Length: 248
Image (cartoon, rainbow, N blue to C red; front, top):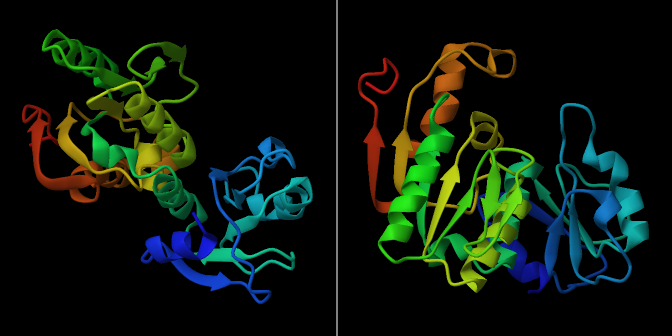
């Protein structure tokens, strides 16, 4: 996919394409870790993600020197490669990864589960029910990532957007018709799920957790509710624990 085509597909996520030289490189992968950029791999766009402890803009030059063909950033940088500028690089890179991977979420039934407690148990139960019906189901969650054939240990509940899209692509390759995904409040708040729309969503409960990040229960609740308000597909259905105060 050409960089210009990627930018056109990111309307609403990206604001500008800075490309004074007129180059239009092929883009094959979105990367947010400069250490994983290599001259042996062509077509990488490096996303300058602003985190709690580091700023990806500080590693942009290193990524370009390592072989990045373009940048996805929140401000124009003095580096001689084309740059897509977005207000929120983390959310934009999630959408970009979805586009580059061919929208794998749109090729499966997507089931998203959120809440403080019970997400993992409910994910395993849901995957088991789907498999008992004879369908192939993958899973992204707190304990494992499952592509429909094999599992690997998870390093976080909801990975970064490019990792989610690569995982979904593997599920499609393995013949999965369904994906069960745990949606953490951090993942929802930071836009890691951009590029995913869920056909079925579930909410278990809400108890105090991560309040140092969310600055109170109401902000925490608003992050969880984004699964229902921002990431649902047309015709979606939801299951909610109405015995919980926030579920009600």
